[in-house]
Amino acid sequence: MTTATDDVVVLLDDHGNPVGTHPRATVHSTTTPLHLAFSCHLRDDAGRTLVTRRALAKRTWPGVWTNSFCGHPRPGESFDDAVRRHAQHELGLPGEAIVGLEPLLPDFRYRAVDAAGVVENEVCPVFTAVLAPGVELRPHPDEVAEHRWVDVADLLDVVEKAPWALSPWIVEQAEGLRLLLARA
View (cartoon, rainbow, N blue to C red):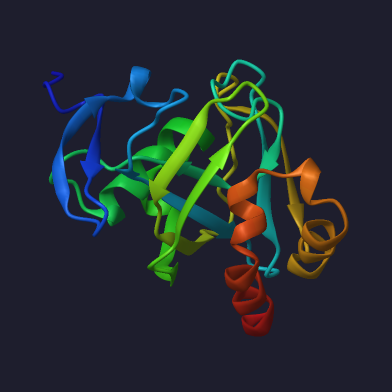
């Protein structure tokens, strides 16, 4: 059963307080209001992180390499539940496949404009989690065109040398990637 809150984003004021909702399908435009989102860096048992190439049909940054997955929590939904819901939708992972979920950059916020003029304007806490051993990824083709497990140091090298090849939010999350590298 679906409800009115199933496909909306939480709008925020400049201080990050909820002030309403907006349909997700139309929130990203040339005048995108500030809203709540999250990013997640999924790691494997070897300490590598999963990067995904956004599907070509995505409204913003189609075909661009980025973090493992991201999304928008629904009104009243915890980040834990939102992360697990999006892991299922984007990567085909059951909720129990995501272990050790923890904040990496809890205060991350960014604004970016893509080549078509579409704006991302998000308070976007960044999380890290580990994929349970033996679980297979089954990416949804409307979300993910390709995926790779990469060493965090190699990803940081791309961030520094070819930021234009990546989503702007993963470039701005370099501090969190350095934290992941320190944990490896």
